Image 1 (cartoon, one colour):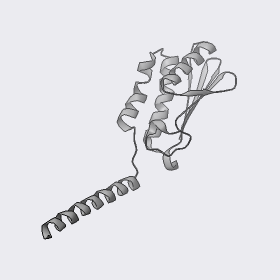
Image 2 (cartoon, one colour; image 1 turned 180 degrees about the vertical axis):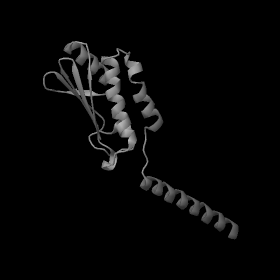
Image 3 (tube, one colour; image 1 turned 60 degrees about the horizontal axis):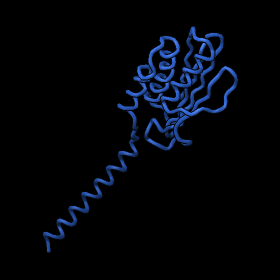
Length: 154
């Protein structure tokens, strides 16, 4: 799931990329070497094998060109199936960067939507997960009934 966002800031390049890096750092991103005038940040596990959205592989690229800031935010959904929450989270990242670099909001206010999404929808369950849990509940109930019948009949 890829979200691209472009906006204009009046900050100088060093200040803009510095604030962008600080914002991404507060979200838990780590930085990789990037081309000049850019940031490349990653977070999450190497593989998308978790239900927890915060642990999915995520990448953000921030580029600066004479006041124009381009953001590309990517998340690798579990099973390759993107849900609305993935797009919401990456959009919250891009809009949070805009809030910091254009509107000069404090970092905690700029990341509020990101935090809300993770708090309310931080874990996704697939129908196969529900089926597995249902089978375990039925098995446990059958064992309890079997033990109860064995006690009553003896």
